Image (cartoon, rainbow, N blue to C red):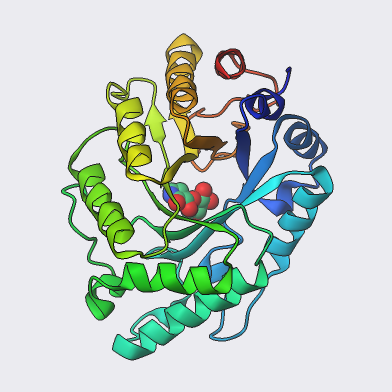
Length: 299
Ligand code: XIL
């Protein structure tokens, strides 16, 4: 195959990109996306602040635009993200106890319910752990206690029984204290029948990141009985060092049968959240970089 999506599909996987729907009007942006990728995720427009700017008033305009584009192109759609400590609408600030719980559950019901049947996998909860493997002391954790994550997964399962439900985080690029903490949570959820299907590894990396236990880490989660997905890959740097890191991540996913696909966080260096870096597969003029060829070769 001569595209990322086509090559990934040969092993039953997807190759996706995070998309900002307002950029779809840029001709090279849309044509590159449509040609290369068979999955998309919203970079921002399905987050809490975008989808529920006022309590109980949902705005699905951006997400609907993305889903329509994806469906017209035959692409899968990942969902990102139902509950996160960041990019919450301001009305959530200061909500306490049962009121925050009600707001979280209503939000999940509203968004996952709206997109029910159209999402391949949802990042139900994003970034809830610290580097040392303990829980992040977010408003959710402080107001609702340890049970909030499983409450979120149960609500997502009720709202969209078809989507796979993922826990997603960064800094989990190997076997370390943080991934150990998440591993223990997933094991506990599976033991107690809390609905969880997948773990997302964001993989915001640099060319010199230590990837020595990257594959082994994916494999240990897969061995627990969940799918693993590389959900927000981007790798700072340039040239061969960057290309080699991209190759290693690609090979790691392909070596793990339950690694179902890879999403890069953007695709052109023209539009990356890492504004002072060049972490993606296409340059600012939509030309294929060395890293692109390394990925295509490895898929
Ligand atoms: C980032 C977006 O790329 C930016 O446009 C936005 O300003 C902030 O969020 N981890 C995540 C993503 O899970 O949602 C973040 O996306 C990047 C880090």
